[in-house]
Length: 120
Image (tube, one colour):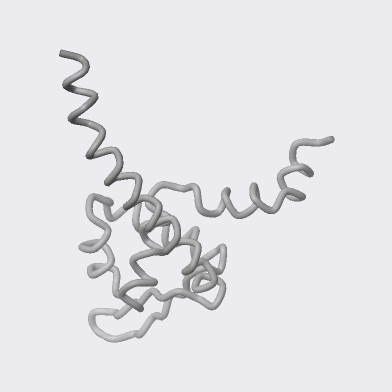
């Protein structure tokens, strides 16, 4: 089977390719939690992302039709990003991943002191 055809025929591979870029899930989760936001707000909330990377991710998410970009020709121009219906469909999945991440972080933080003591 041709690799390209396999990638298209596998639903998990299809969606993970959309979501696997750096910062992608963080951006989607932030838009889901806080609603439509301007670039500056989003950059402040997605701690650590560069303006260049955020721009790149927003463009790819817009191409995948997970977010929309609303432009108002004011001075200065006002651009707002929001989840589309397709992007909102990810809400439950992202909530579950967030809950699992919180659980695993808590488990690992209680395990870390025991691992350090065993190494001594």
